[in-house]
Image 1 (cartoon, rainbow, N blue to C red):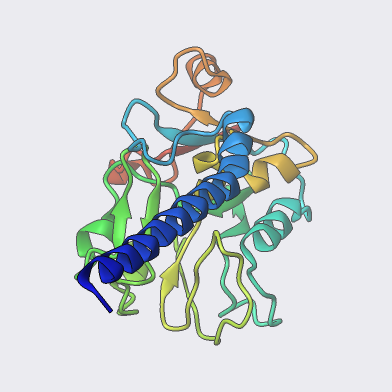
Image 2: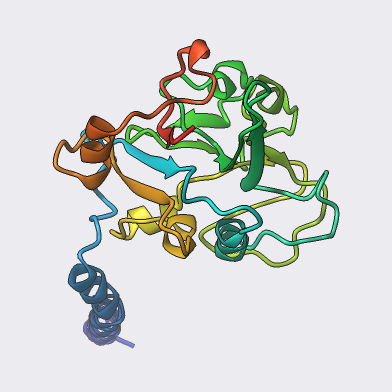
Amino acid sequence: MSKSEVHTSEDQVNASRRSFIGKTAALTTAAIAPGLFLHTSAGARDPSQAVTDKVRWGMLIDTNKCADGCTECVSACNKENGLPDHGRPASDPQWIRKVKLRDNLTGRETNLPMLCQHCEHPPCVDVCPTGASFKRADGIVMVDRHVCIGCRYCMMACPYKARSFIHETITEKPTHAPRGKGCVESCTLCVHRLDRGETTTACAEACPHQAILFGDLNDPNSELAQRLKSEPSRQIRADLQLNTGVRYTSI
């Protein structure tokens, strides 16, 4: 075969490769485009944009509206995050639980949901030896299960007992809630929803008594900020000066 014939053959191969790559790129773009369109139409935050401290997510829980015996918020959280019920309340993962407070002087009992309080100064983050416990710029305190070594220092440091240790092998889990045996976990304020552009949590959405109000603490025009401004509220263990993102009223 002459040199000119070899060059002609190589040129044909290269042209064919360029054509193939071009078509593949076009198909890839076509495959991604519908997803991008859906995200845009849903008003979601661009995932390429960093979370900022302009927003601080939080809650106001009205204990007067929290009904005794109602566990709709707990069930909604478990369903949203794929938390199983093994029938062992002492060791089953609980991202939110109902507790009852009793005033020893008056005998008055108060029901309230207890969850991670998403502290501004979270002691769980301070004691974590690997950096698995961290706080996002928008105030959400989370655990990176890929870095967590299961030492449980954070569980001992949390004054709200809001963290759980996973004892069981996880066989089924939602893609938005990665979990694994031997790791610690806790409420994420449904961060997957927020990162999709949604504005409420599963527990707040499920509460039939509208006892849970979720919103942006930093937005003075948000309903949450307005109610905190007009109604007396308190932090649980305010003496620890953790500046919690979850506040309670009617206690």
